[in-house]
Image (tube, rainbow, N blue to C red; front, side, top):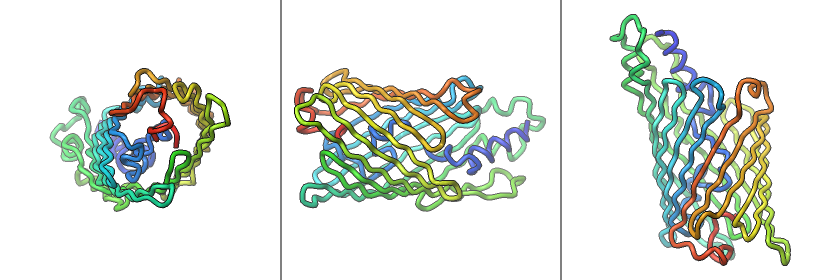
Length: 310
């Protein structure tokens, strides 16, 4: 049992599976603040996003993630806070970050420069010690007591009502993930990432729909470049939208969203893997609710809201 605990810690905490070090959501194109602190407040409304993601359903103890974020535009300042929790088998991760973005106008565009402080806590469930020969072992107890990690994210975000481009660097400091106990001989750290996103929203003349192509490029140190290509179609002045995403990691995603009230939207995404894992999983599911405080009646969304028209 002790060996299993060591394997879980080393794989999921210490960088063997780099994607698990940061939350990865299919609906990043709906909430750019997920990947870029400079996007805090960029839609010019107080906004709450809530996300639930169930990854690789059908596999035992598959990852589950919940996240809530709040953004506030205050004149030339954008503030944002995120709280999240995820679980893989007996391993839990809780985290939060607080973002500050300074925004300035450049002709018909706006430029945001943002920085966020990032906190994460890794810990094992108490029931993970069931069957352990020596429950007082230092490795087991350190794993249950948990590991606190602090880091920072940096970003820039350039946008107007029709386009956006952003660049962010999560895990800027690359905080060390200290060894748990005295029997682990390796020391790892959070992997720095480089993320570039851009998109453009096109409104055909005299039409009730819009087309928005976008791309995300992600480079995690020591891993190959990843790309996500998305095409989003908005209908009835964005009251309903669909999106299709293809990733170079052999994942395709279908997303659909609907305006359920004047200030709120709900979105659902389904990921399907084209790789070998598709034989063992029923795909990944993600659902989000977006609420913009003070958003005007739906008939005039394009005049004010930046959320679905980047």
